[in-house]
Image (cartoon, rainbow, N blue to C red):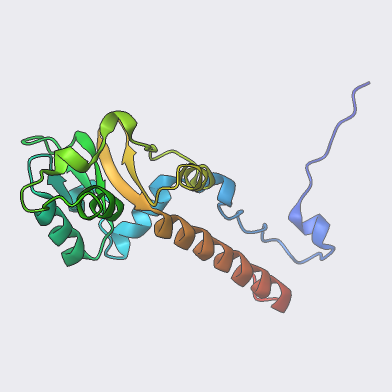
Length: 188
């Protein structure tokens, strides 16, 4: 005869006859935190990670104008779009590109086009919005890059190593707060 298993209840496990509330739902762990979650955070904290506020340039813009745009917005990279195309990425241009390919090579940023110094789409490291945040950090570390476009068929945003680290630290701080509340009996 098969064993009938009774469903475990919070009331029984607590050992209190009067406790009837179930445990709170589990928080989203790091293994479930995605790039989309980071983009949502950037959108609410005034960041420019989402495509509707994404700061970009065109392949035919001068490097001078691109770097000026980065400085104005205090960012280290720009998504490069094809002329006339708002959502399909041609590449990325970074401060590092400027330093190595303009300053280091003795070129003029006022006459050099972004398309000449950018990392081309074919060599671009990117992630999708569903990519796990830990995987995104690994990709960035392994490839020695600090900025990654988020592409779901077309460009949907941009994340940086700072965004990833901030998301992980915020998550860990939340976990610590929940544990402290639990220990103090303030969890419910």
